[in-house]
Image 1 (cartoon, rainbow, N blue to C red):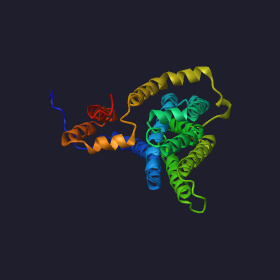
Image 2: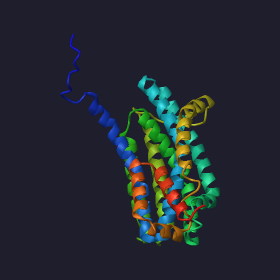
Image 3: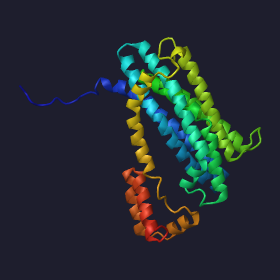
Image 4: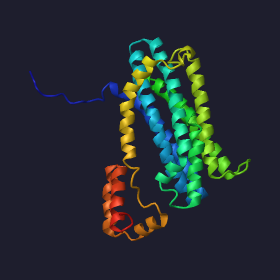
Length: 317
């Protein structure tokens, strides 16, 4: 018997199926990123204060989205198990349970950021930059917090759809949200047919996109006759289902929170003038150390390199 392994002369038959599942998911992640990119670009057109405030406030908003991860991961896993086994009624019940759970998480995260916006702005160093930057950041966080519940509904629906193997619907809904966000935010910032709202217009545009996304998701999940769907009689939390989904999702949340919170304490000098002074005084060796950290694809390494340089410059104890 020959021990030689035959060479692959053609792609595995599973490869087209994998691409069919992976490409929409990859596109979905890009669309999520693009919403924040448009917001940051619009803020840059307003001014430096707006650009800095929106950029850092968006980071806090992203932290809140990690809370939805516990719902999304648990939902996808449970729905996938039942859907793959042909138990569609059970899969629909799992998908339906994600709705109240997502709404509870969305309301909690929204309340935390709404009430704690000044604290989060302080942690990001916005107060040490300028009063205008600080106020922009606080307003941005508070307006955004009011629409977290709609984001939660979209993410709950997306997780259920992915669990049933439907990767295209989440992508299409996010695409519509992107177009809406770009159009409404640009109109409100630039004053196209409406009074210009400045940086408030950026997050209001995002809020409109989130509300529209939740509405479209509700239509899709309430009217489907063949795919996974929401059942109104199951849209009330049931302990055994909630515990089961969170048992799967909470470890993923803990890992994400651990990575993010590792970057919150001891930020790079909060005073903007001190930051620019430090960077103006960087030697080729300093820049080389930062360049070496960047390819590692880790924000933590970059942050540590900048902290080290700041301490060497006497800007931090």
